[in-house]
Structures are given as C-alpha cells and as structure tokens.
Image 1 (tube, rainbow, N blue to C red):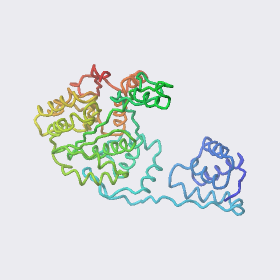
Image 2 (cartoon, helix red, strand yellow; image 1 turned 45 degrees about the horizontal axis):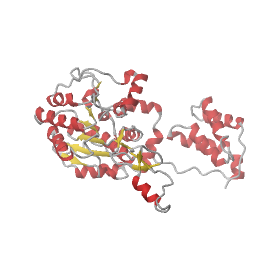
Image 3 (cartoon, rainbow, N blue to C red; image 1 turned 120 degrees about the vertical axis):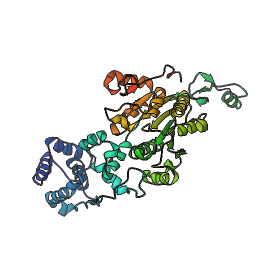
Image 4 (spheres, rainbow, N blue to C red; image 1 turned 180 degrees about the vertical axis):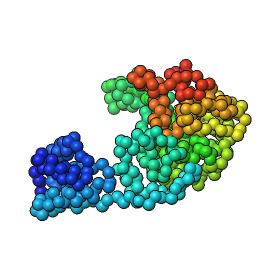
Length: 412
C-alpha cells in the first residue's frame, strides 16, 4: 500500500497547467474542484491523487491516455519512491459501429457491460439535451443505447391509495384485538398496553400497453426499457404488447439484463412488426384483466399511433370500459411530436374522449412529461403552480397537448 503524500495548491495548479499544455480544456473551477476533492480525504495517497484528477479533470474517454501520460510525467519523482499507480484497464470503445439495429424486432445481439459503462461515461450535459429532443426513430444504435441509459434514470413517484387490510403498527386509529388478547396471556388477562392497527397506503400499479406494429418499433423498444427499469426499481408494473392480439410480457421483463429481456420478448411476441387490431386488443385486456390490479385502479399508459384496422366503434367501446376501471389513462402517440398533427384518424378520434392525458411519447422529453403526469394530483398541482407551461390544457378536438382530470379522480 502506498504511503501518504502531500499535495499543495501549487501542485494542483501546476498539474492542471501541464494538462492544458497537453490539449485538455481546463478552467479554474476544475482546478479548485481537484484541490477540494483531495482535501476531503484524511490520508491522501498517490492512488487517490490519480483517481481524483481523472474524475474531475477529464470528461471524455479519449482524454484518458493524455491524462495518464501527464500524470506519470508530473508525479514521476514520487512514483520512483512510492510506486506509480497502475492505470486501470480502460473499457474498450469500438470505433466500428455495430450492425444497425432495425426499427422493429429487438436485436438479438446484446450490449455488454463494457458498452453500458462506456455509454454512461460518454454522457455529458450537451449530449443529454440533444438526446432529449431527438425522436427515437431518428436515433442510431449508439444513440439508442445512450437513450436507454437515460430512461433508466427516470424515477416517477407513483400515487398511493389506501389498502384494504389492516396491519399492526405502533400507532393507529384501530385497536388490535387479537394482539391485545395474545399479549395479555402472560399477565393473566391484564393488558399492559393497547396494540394498534392501521391501514397502510399501497402504491397504485402501473400498466403499459405497447403497440408493436411496424410503425411503432423504435417507440415500443424505448417504452420497454422504461417498463424494465420501473419493474426492477420495485414498482408494481404490468406490461402488455398489442398488435394482432394481446400478449402479457411482464415475466419476460423480470430478467436482470434489459437486453436479455428484450431477446426473450422477441421470441414470445409473434406479432411484432405486424398489423394493428388495437380495439380487439384493448377489449381483450378489459375482458381478461378487468377485475385484476393490472387494470382496476391502475395507471394505464397506452402507446400507439392510433392507426387501427378495427372498426372505430370497437376501440371506442373498449377505451370507455378501460377508462371506467383505471385510475388514470395516459395515451402516448408519437405522431403528436409533429406540431401539425391532428387526431383525425378514426381510431384515435374514437379513443381520445376517454383519455385523461394525451402526450407525444416520441422522445425523452415526452417521457419526462409522462412521468410528471403520473405524479399524484396534489403534487402535480404544486408543479403546475411553479411552472404552468409544463402542461397545456386545451380541447381534445384541437389536437394539442392537453391534460384532462376526472372529477372523481381524488376519490378513486
């Protein structure tokens, strides 16, 4: 183990100047951050100096070789006495692009852990802002991997509702009679304290209904990444695909790796890139799961462009039944990302009167809007008060972004 070393402010300034001469763009803020990071440690070793500088003074993987060479040159006297730290094995970043993934069926070639680590390392604020406004359909394979890493960071706070069963608690409005009798047995029936019970709050389930027709491939893949992240974050999530028929894929998403889950889904969903019988699929969802927690009292998110081959009356009746059972119904239509879009398709026009929240869902920014729409009503009221421009309220016939709340939303 290396011995502690003394690093002064002059040392940090001179090392930063050497990196600037080697071509790294460093400012005074980064130099001060480097100095502050070192003095947060009790015993500073050369190993700590290396990692603190690499974290603070570099922001791209291409700068790592330059930093390693400059570090070895600058701290060579100390390295001779103390042993220079061995730079860790760099995560390989291939300069040859992968085979282009199609916009339909998920690729069977997974991204390894090295690729995921490289994606997180390359994400800088400017790239994040560009990715947030870029459509999923216009992204290449590398951008889709980065977008998947950003989707995994979304953490919406789902609303909670009062449960049906009472549980023992330290305090509560109800007397725990069974607990009282059990606790009084050792004291000959004399209760020493009054145990209580209360009804805990439970998180409302989240149900994703994803259209996997040919025109929805890139957007369906992005929403599958969102469902995988929510499921592994501990939320109650149910995921269905709808094309020619309805398919439940919740169990397939329980795989730890998102790529393994997508490969399993590709084998389980036989109507990917096929036609769209949206009305039939929604009706099957209501018939099979209408009394299940996947629908009743859940927050349902439907992702589809509304181009349905069923009769509009079938989709309208199915959406009406789904609206009555769900707590909130959100529809994501990627076509809405175009400002000129109007919901004039027969299927979309039949479904829209039964939708609570109508959003685009074509990029990361619209996914963030969806997460805000899933926030409990009282909390979202505070958000709207701080920034009224986040949600635009207008009529559904106009086709613009709109947020419609049911009168009995809070009671449900």
